[in-house]
Structures are given as structure tokens and as C-alpha cells.
Image 1 (cartoon, helix red, strand yellow):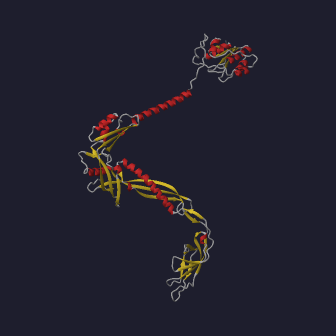
Image 2 (image 1 turned 90 degrees about the horizontal axis):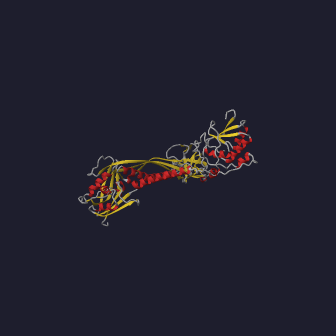
Image 3 (image 1 turned 180 degrees about the horizontal axis):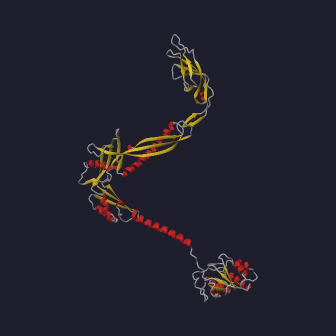
Length: 544
């Protein structure tokens, strides 16, 4: 087969059978080499193979399929088409064992000569077989390849496999996390030890002094620290005030001046007020009023006067008054008003100062509890005992928008406040408490069993506070004293022990009446190996 006699046609993976047949028919050569792409699907049909063979026969042409895919071999053999591995290989017709094709699920299909290629192609578009590419290179140039029956392969669902892997991985991580939590974090032990104990009250009167440097047990002065916490908050407050924005009434005022001296006249500036029964009118402009004469008995005749225009100091129709007498801030100046007219009412809401003050107080009280909790936690971390009632607010800013007197249905009040609290060192208090308690117990057989020396339930009363910041403090605590037991030593002795062994070890100590060991969660069956996971509680066994 030479280049002059053959035509090489390269088939695309998307070519249809009708398109391939057209290319074959248009070729002027008698020998046509069809170079097939890998994984071509159009010729994986017996019908398409036979349509291609029929087109070759009608054009008196010989077709050679250039491919190494073993899956096409039996189909080409069934259609009696030549196949070559390469353009330089010897073409052969692969064997066409019908039994093997039938075993693979491929039925022999006869081509209806009365139908066109397009009709046959449409009718057989679903007749394809699964292709096995694993043995694509096993075809020999000189020896026809034996093909095994193509059994239908089940393609794994990789998407489902990926989902299972993801869920499996997440589940494994959660399981490992749960096991770590269950073994190392969750286990806790609560050991309640009942002993013969007694309660003792201790009352201390001391001075918490910010200026003191060291504890003075003689004068009962404890160094104190001042700690601040700055807060800011705002809230909306409805306006409760009212204002009449209507037009102001106006009229005239006849003014009389009855001086107590020999002044001949008086000049009243604009804005001078004249009032009657709570209604006030002011002069529109400066007015000079001559002095009236007096009778021989000393009474003012009010024989001289000056009339001037006046306007109500507020809007509203209630200022529309009939003629009446008015007084001013000076007893020597009086007036007689005309009928006041022109006032109209338009009542609107305005912000009162009381609205702002009320919101401010609410914000200060609300923030005080928050600041106290935060300060207490902060001081506890520093082993400081906070004198809770010493929390003092200092307001640094109060603003209202809209401000007092402005027309609005509500106002937003913002408050910046600094809270200051006095605290003393717990160690100093414990030293004073223990010194006091030692005079009430037998130190040779008893010891204080409260870890905090009773400070957790202390009652604190504050006295006078000096200008320097010193505060008089009365502190009352109740301390439990019993057998000399070291909670930490007990914890170290029972770590890792079983429940029964834990109880036995503790009960052997003197003064112990009963031991109750509780584990949590439910799966825990031994005392945790970390002392921080063990809680030791001392209780009285003598029924008090």
C-alpha cells in the first residue's frame, strides 16, 4: 500500500458515522486509512461498523481502521473491516467469534439495505459497548489480536466514595477528639470528707489605706489599691416636656414710675418683664418713663406714664388676656396692660432636663454592676479581695442628642463613667484571720479547713472614708476548724486510685468519720491523675 494509492483520513472524536461515511465517499482513492482517535465512541457499534463497510463496498473502496484499541477488534471483524495498529503495519481482518460477542451482550444486527445511512444511524444510536482500554497496546502488527469477551464493567461512583471518605475522616477526628476529652479532660472526682469540726467567728476592724506600704498588725492597717474600670453606654429616653410653639400674643403696656428718691425719670431697657398671675410680657424696645408725683400723704398719684409695646415671653393662645395690672422686678415700676391678642397654640414635645438626668442615673446603675463583676474577676486573678461597697462612679461625660429644651419625641443620652474600687491583698486578710482564730482553737490538734479562710462568705461593712482615701472596714468571717488535713496532700495520695482504694486511703487518717467519692462522667471508674481534676470538700460529721 503506497501513498499514491491510499488516502489517509483522520477521524475526530466528535465525528458522527454519517460524517465519516461522507469523507469515505468523497475520497478519490480506492484504499482509505481511517486513523481513529483513542476512546472513539462512534465505531463502538456493530451497526455503525456495517454501515461503514456497506459504504466502502458501494464505492468499491477498501477501508483500513488505524487503531490499537482491542475493544474495536471484534466489531471490525464482525463487519469484515481491515485493522492496522499503525499506518506502516500490515492490515488484517480481526476474528469475529459470534459466541464471544454474544457473551459480551452484543447482538448480531443485519443492515437494512432499504434504509439510508442516516436512518440506520438514528435507529442504532443506543447500540454501544463498554470499552476496555487497559489492553490497547497488546495488538501485534503481524498477528491478529485475540480479544476476550467485553463484559460490562461497573464504573465506581467516585463522588459517593469521596463523600464517604470525607464523612469518615470527620467522624474519625471527632472520635479521636471525644476520646481525648473523655480520657484527659472530662474525668473529675469530688471527694467529700466528713470530720468532727467546729465553726469559729472572726471579726476584724481594720483600715484599708492606699498610702500604706506594709501590713501593720498592731494598728490593723492593710495596704490598699485603687483599681479603675472605664465604661460608656447610651440609651434612648422618651421626651416628657411640652412647649407651645404657637405665635406670641402682644399688646401695649402703660408704665408708671413711682420713685423712692428724687429721680425725674427712669429708662427701662428692651426685655424688661411685666408679670400678672404667671403670665409675663416684655418690652419690645427701650422706654423712658417719667416719674409720677406723690400726694402730701406720700401716695403715688400715677399721674405721669409712658405707653410701650410688649410681647408675651411664650407662644400660646392662653396669653390672649384682657386688660389688667402688671408688676415688674422693681416695686417702683408698675404697668397697666391693654387687651393682649394674637397668641396661637402649637403644642410640641421637648426634651426636659429631668429626662436626661433619669437616663443618666439608669446608665450609671446598670454599668456599675457590670464594672463590679469585671473588677472582682480581675482582682481575684491577682489574689486581691475587693471591698465591693467601695465601688464609686465618677461621671466624665453626659451628652444628650437632642439636648434639653429642643423639640423631639425622644433623646439619646450618652454617659462616660469611671468606676473606682478599693481592694486589699487576700494574704494580708488571711494573716489577720489566722492570728485571730489561733486564740480560739487548739493549734496542736486543729487547723483551719477553709481554703479561703472564710473570705468567700465574708460580710463586709464600710465605715468612714478620709480625704486621703483611707476606709474603715468591718469584716466578719466564719472559719471551720477540724483535724489537721492537707487537701493537696490528700489529692496527691489518691491520684489514679480506684474508688474503693481512694476511700480506704483517706479513712485511715485521724479525725475522718466518713468519705464519699463521686466520679463524673459516668464512665470514669478511677480518680483522675491530675490533682486539678480533684475537688476535696470538708464537712462536719457531728450534725451541726
